[in-house]
Every structure is written in C-alpha cells, then in structure tokens.
Image (cartoon, rainbow, N blue to C red; front, side, top):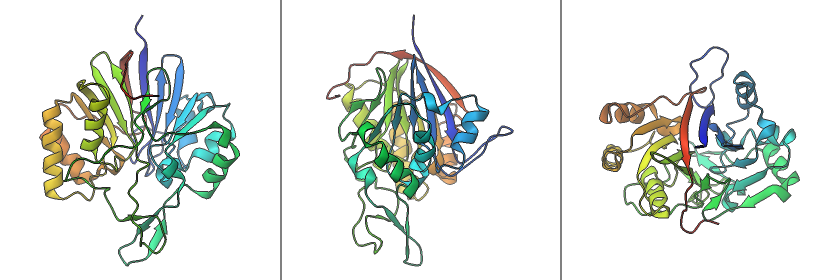
Length: 289
C-alpha cells in the first residue's frame, strides 16, 4: 500500500476560510505515513489557533524543522515546545545567531528567534539536532542543510545583518528546505529560500541524481527582486517543467502575479488551510545522514 503525504498550511500571510487567521509568516504540518513533522512555526500568534480550527494536534509532532532563524518562522516555537512530547528539533547552527534587518532610515531592528522561543530551545537543547548537511527528519522527509550558492543572479533578498550596527552581513547560511520523493517527482517545501529558489532546487536535484521536480511550495523571497532576477527565475522554473508551484509568504505580490501569469495552469493557492496530498516514494538521496 502506498503511503500518503498530506501537507497542511498552518500559517501564511493570507487566509480565506472563516475562522482561520492570516499572519506574516509560514508553517506547514506534514503527515508522512505515521509520522508528523512541523516545518516552521510562524510568528506565534496564529499557529495554535489555526491548528485547533483545522483539527491538528501540535503536541503529536514527531519532529520540528526550522527553515532559518527569523522571527516569522520560529516565533511559535515556545508554544509548540510547551506541550510537545519529546520531538527532535532540526535547525542549522547559524539559526541560533542574532539577526537584524536594516530599516530605510538606516536604523536596525532585531528579526532573529524571539526571546521566548530561544529560551524554550535552550530548555530542550537535548532535542536539538544541529544539521548543516542533508539530514533525514523522517523516513521520507529530508532537510537540505545549507544550500550552495551557485547562481549569479540570486542573493539573500534583503539587507540582513548579524549585528545591530549593520556592519556584518548575514549570509543566512542557516536557510534550508525540506523535500521528499512522490510517485510523480520531487516535492520541495521552502521557508524563505534566502539561498535563492533556483539554488535550492538545483541542490535538491543534485542530491537526488537529477530527479524531476513535481511541486514547489512556499516562500521564494522575490518581493524585492529586480526585473532581471524575476525573469531569470521564471525562465529556470519553466525549464524545470515543474507541475505545481505554490508561491507564498515572502514571494511578494508582484512576483506571485508574474509567476501565475508566466506559468498558467501550474500555480496553485498556498493560503492558510490549503491541503495537498501526494503519494510517497522511498527516496535514496546521496550524502544524507
């Protein structure tokens, strides 16, 4: 019997169903056979509410994966860890570092893991798996670890720094994605793709001996992308012949509209409450621990 993977969007910038809350952030609930994985946690204001409304018990998570250490992806950790039975927490070491963004007036704001979530992580440090390289979060789900930067047209997507004085640029080496093999091809879930969505997809294909990509869902951080970057990104995505594309969160409205226009029939909604189901295929990826 083929195992199913069901993905439910728990947190996203948009919500279209009564009773669900929208929030600038992202979180996915992934049910892969008998295993349950929470990928990101949003800011923390919508996660528990939306999970309850959608009939999902966060305390049943077998693993928690952070795509990177920004507040809008790690802010709900404190609530999740408060009532969670022992579950591994996967994160790149750099996700735990202080993180800042520069404002237009030259000042800065802190955008790293919020204090309550950082304290919760410290209390459960025995569960923390610091993954820099591809790592299995479950039998079928693989966390990429750090993504190599090979394209010349992609960057981190904004003025991000490791210090409040904005002197040391944050390379966001903690940025990572999750992927698995379905019977129709690879399915890739993105947090923000600060490494570049094309860099990420190329790396996933490298890890899987060039397997075709069936679906890509999540934040692509194209909201500040130049026209050239957007055009080249669309060209690369078109060349990969991806069947389903769910741009969300930090992709940006203009870029999302451009993707829907350029790839007709392939783009799908990815708002809170969206559920997608795939048939799981056991994958043997190279270099995965």
